[in-house]
Length: 101
Figure 1 (cartoon, helix red, strand yellow):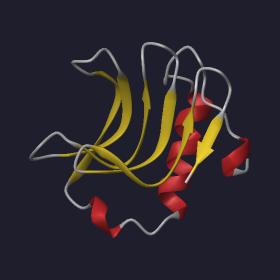
Figure 2 (tube, rainbow, N blue to C red):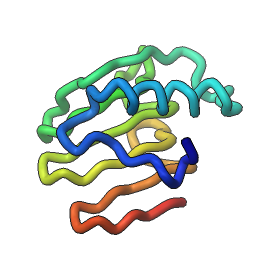
Figure 3 (tube, helix red, strand yellow):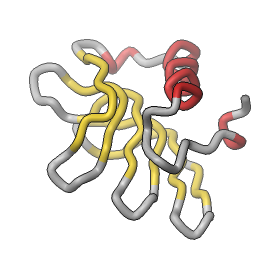
Figure 4 (cartoon, one colour):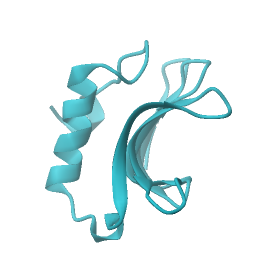
């Protein structure tokens, strides 16, 4: 499935297809910066967002590749660095707009 064609499950990040998609992007990419990371699934964050993906072991920051869903239904799938969305990714707005960058 092409990167721009994929849409995350709007009920959360537990959809098996979403997790396979994320793993496929990780497997096909060049992600040297993801050393010392671990995988988490459906981690509830303090702001009621849900995150699935990689986090730095020592800081617990989102780092590497992952997907985050906000309570209003917005989602981001892509690269993270030190807790911030950075690099290639796709943001799905609740009104249906999609930003890729």
